[in-house]
Length: 286
Image (cartoon, rainbow, N blue to C red; front, side, top):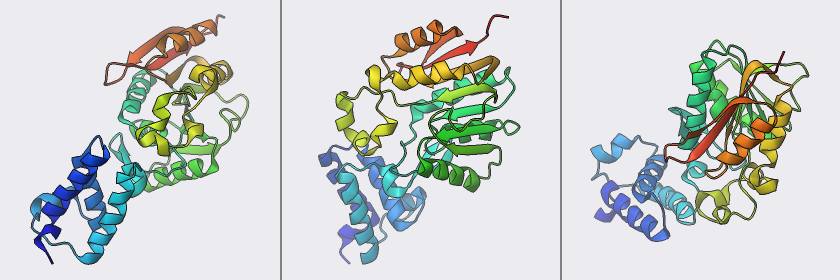
């Protein structure tokens, strides 16, 4: 077989093709896809650069590389994305977990220290936020709700595969599956918050993700308003509501929470120094 079909040269050629296609991370994409095609760890690429690929391996790699060149997210191609150091199965029915969402997890864990009780994750998708919290708080029960039954089933499989027994996932619209009177110490959510005319919806990986998990009415704030209002019936006294939101929505989300009577309202930055998470505490007057 020609030398150009060695691991090293196959990788180099793939990087060049991905660069030409406009990939933001061509080297990483090529390495992850080649490892997936070969069913080998990343260390294999460094240890065996001269290894000649078999025809079937090349065919499999070309198939998945072509999908990435056409813009399909790597996570959907390989069916997995790491979040909070946990390998999560993903599918086109859910959003791909993103590093910035780990800020929501960090803030929730900080507030959970002094706020005992169950935790609710609304719009759970792959279960990323709920499972991350469950992994750090094994004595707490973490609930997850998603509108889509397939998302609820995916989140359940992720938790079971990773061995977490302190999670419970339900299908329904926001609080619909939660029994009246149920109280939570923390309610967290990464809801749809993109305005439907946002040009980013036609760019990059977002093109392949479900619009229902991305877009909200009222300039992207409709679902945040709905959750903030209805959460009042499900938060225990002293409980926290926390949202991930758009980089330019911090002011609006703080206003929403303050107008409903939440106190200690505060917005936190993500790793790129953009407004990303806003929280408020429910402390009704006695």
